Image (cartoon, rainbow, N blue to C red):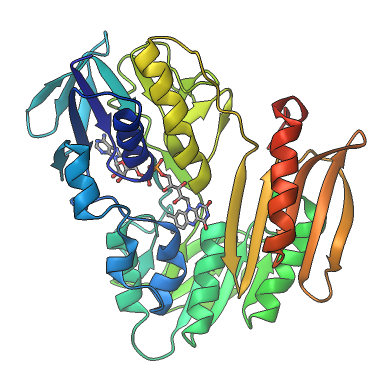
Length: 390
Ligand SMILES: Cc1cc2nc3c(=O)[nH]c(=O)nc-3n(C[C@H](O)[C@H](O)[C@H](O)COP(=O)(O)OP(=O)(O)OC[C@H]3O[C@@H](n4cnc5c(N)ncnc54)[C@H](O)[C@@H]3O)c2cc1C
């Protein structure tokens, strides 16, 4: 291959570029990124970056020396708009074309917009550094009434950060409990308790009916008629994969770019990684998948066919209200939960999810030392234990 293009200059794109060089690819490497920024880390954006504990310089994913060693052409602040049917020519928004022999799609996801919020000031989403800067600036003044819509990871982490900053925070969640799909009902109950422990009001089982305000939001109206006064709203209602162009023109897309379990798409010279990739039927929106998939994808790209598979059990972490939540594996509805260490009362524990007598997932809250061997054991047990819903 003489030219490989990576579309998406963020976590998975950077790891793909690193993997290409590490695996001996010495041809032309072009990295196209819609954001104007060099690759930066997103997890701190809802945590230390908002509270001020993490500075902007600490977000950088690569230092100038490493970037120089990658010997890549960085085309930043420009979107890849289309890919020809053969998957060989990328058309960029500014009219440039990149002719490639291989393509890594690493376009990630974007925050799902809140319906009815168009043009209304004070309503934020959180996906990019620019979003986080705007949110941090808005939270910088005196205590304000913050309404967070959605108690998923982004919502919960942002609510916790707002509470640390001294704001009055209410979280509104449409489901009966937060994070049920990820953790199951029992552990979701525990997470609901974290909000309360952190001094945040959690309203569950209720939808948002309308936002009030002329130029800027003043209140959030709920479907049950309650009206929550609000100076600032954060919509944390999920992410949408950026699976349109350039991938959509030639590649099957179904809530993500469809690939096999080696990240290879319908075209052998196109692989997809990170939040945009539906790998072996599963799309992950977690940091670790975005860092582990690229080495496998690149191996297959350079081989011209699938010779390697994404092997490890899915893993994610979240920091909420001072608690570190770590989860590995796949849970199933009806799993038996077995507490292995600690207790829910003390807020620090390790628990196994068992399906047909076999441990298929492990959750730890503030037990990082115990979690590590449990994660390794699950990885060793192999993917055959891990088929099933996430
Ligand atoms: C606030 C926040 C907190 C998080 N916290 C955690 C956490 O605690 N734990 C965890 O496991 N995960 C966390 N995550 C998830 C993690 O950050 C993502 O899984 C990871 O960023 C995915 O990386 P990616 O490179 O696939 O996609 P992204 O990081 O979304 O990057 C994709 C890049 O591609 C660019 N792009 C899109 N379309 C185009 C195009 N057509 N042309 C050119 N460029 C394009 C985008 O602008 C973007 O820069 C968090 C995410 C956010 C937003």
